[in-house]
Length: 73
Image (cartoon, rainbow, N blue to C red):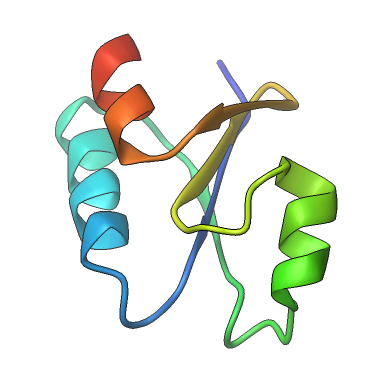
């Protein structure tokens, strides 16, 4: 089983779609909402290499956002 982490915010429409894509494909993932967790954009960038959400990390490798997720699933 792959370790999938998705960094999101409350207001992000692409995050909603990314979560639906993952759920529809039967992929389990851990969501980290950067707003409710108190994570800054700088911390997000340090972890994922991205300032934007969703930021998706699979097995420790940043795969990007929604567009890249759709390409690989």
